[in-house]
Amino acid sequence: MVFGTDNNETIAPENLESYLSNGYKLIDVREQDEWDAGHHPEAIHIPMGTIPQKIDDFKTSDNYIIICRSGARSGRVSSFMKNEGFDSLNLTGGMKELSLSSKKIVDLNGNNGTVI
Image (tube, rainbow, N blue to C red; front, side, top):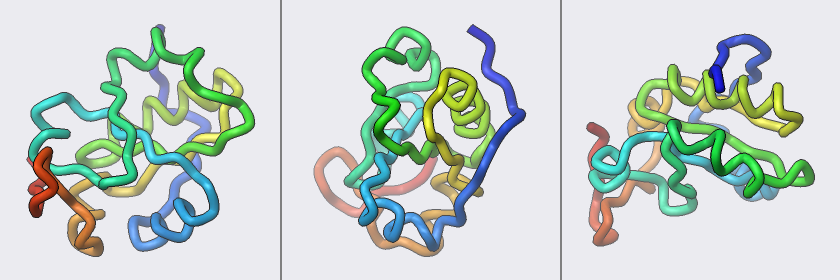
């Protein structure tokens, strides 16, 4: 599978909570060590490299927001998902930007997390 960068719609980090309240699912595509250090508590962790194998776990009836550290990987995954027929948005600036506007970044123990 090839991840592309075309066909992307984005949302700003400050709008994330509103989208989550409206039923969007947050998919974090970072690697395990990045996830362990800090993630949004409502996120589902599916590393980028496993998305093609797990594509059948996604539902076309659901809406997704894809996040990574800076927005680059998530942009490629979001484009791939759109090409596969899913409603998918990329979070602009990724976890780096989200951490500037959200206090909801936690580590594996539920403590304040960090973005690495």
